[in-house]
Amino acid sequence: MPAFIFSWNNFMFALIFSDEDTRTAPVTLFHFISYAGTDWGGLMAAASLMTVPVVIVAVLGQKHLVAGLTAGATKG
Image (cartoon, rainbow, N blue to C red):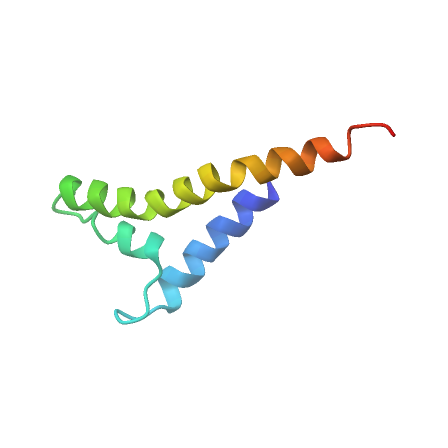
């Protein structure tokens, strides 16, 4: 729950205090949604580009994460 609250606060602060030149990625995604409609193509393309690096890091680091978690579980 604290991680969700921190993420939400981070989004709100960036939304309120950022300029057009200094937007964060979630705020940029938010601007694809307007009163007149939603640019679904642009929103999905930008969200995919934001997600790809996270997935790549997770796949490459999974082996090391599992090795670190299981290293402390053995006796001896």
